[in-house]
Image (cartoon, rainbow, N blue to C red; front, side, top):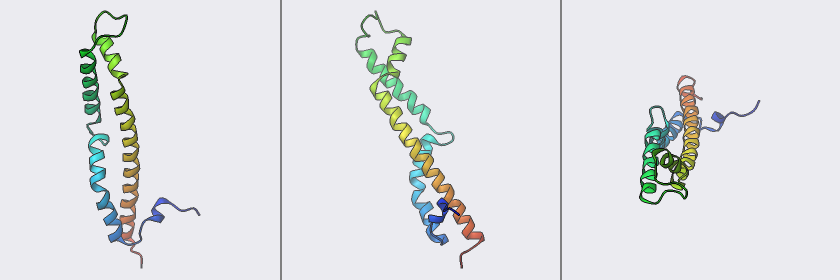
Length: 119
């Protein structure tokens, strides 16, 4: 039989609970953006608006008479700052999902140790 991720967790309840507590702040920070009811989309809209404001200060692309809302919106979506925000967000979301899965395994192990203590 192959090993499962919970096989690598400590076998005493106190150690598992310490691991959960140790990861709590990092998880909470990430959950504020990427978890249920997280504020990631609000952050995304803010970054997009800042990119649009920056673009509006400059000249429109060649061949465009003036900035229109549609052109500005398209240009803001292609702005390097917005692209970097999205790339960073994807990396952070992956870390959040891995941390959440790890904490779920720790919680399962803690429950297991609570109801079936190792002797």
